[in-house]
Image (tube, rainbow, N blue to C red):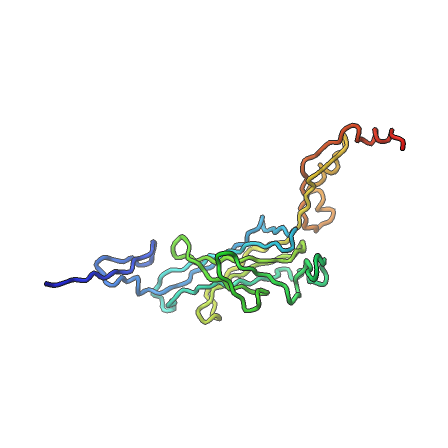
Length: 252
C-alpha cells in the first residue's frame, strides 16, 4: 500500500503578479522576490493649514508604500519594514527659539535652531525609533494594509507654534543597509496658523461692529500676513436698559 502525504502550497495574494496553478509544485510565486514601487506621504491638515492654538498640538503623518512580487535582477529578498520621516523648512525662514514667545518655563513657540526641540512623536499602534531622539527624524515600522501589496506607516509631527512657519515632510524607504534609497516622496507644503473665535458677542441695539467684522476676510488684510483665522459666534443684543442712551440718563 502506498501512502501519499499532502504538501501544503503557498497561496498567492489577491492580484499577485504570478498566480499559483494547482498543477505546479511548488507555487512559482514563492520564488519571486520584492520590488518597491512607490511611497506616498500625506499630512492631516485643513487645506494645508495646521491650527496651533495649543503649542503642544501635533498632526498625523501617513505614508503608504506600494510593492509587487518580482523576478527582476535587482529585486529584494525581503521587504523593507520601515519608513524614514524627515522635515524641511521650504521657505527657510521659520522662527527660532530666541525670537519667539516664551509661553511656559523654558518652552518657546519657535523651534528652529533649538537643539532640544522634539518634532516627532510615535502614533499609537506603530513602533517608532530615531537616531537623534526624534529631533530630526523618525523611523517607523510598517504594517500590511489593504489593498494587497501595500504597507502603511504613521507618526505624529510636532511643528512650531508660530503663525506663518511652514514645513514639508519627506518619507523615504531604504534597502536593508539603511543607506541605499529605494523610493521617496514629499508632502505638500503646509503652514502654521492660529485661530481667534469671538464666541460671546454682546452688542447694543444697532451696533454690529464685532459681529459683522470678526472674520478672517476683514481682519487679515489689515495685518497681512497675520496667519490668524477669525470667526464670529452668535450675536447677543443687549436690552434697552443696557443701552448707551439709557445709561447716560443715570446720575451717580
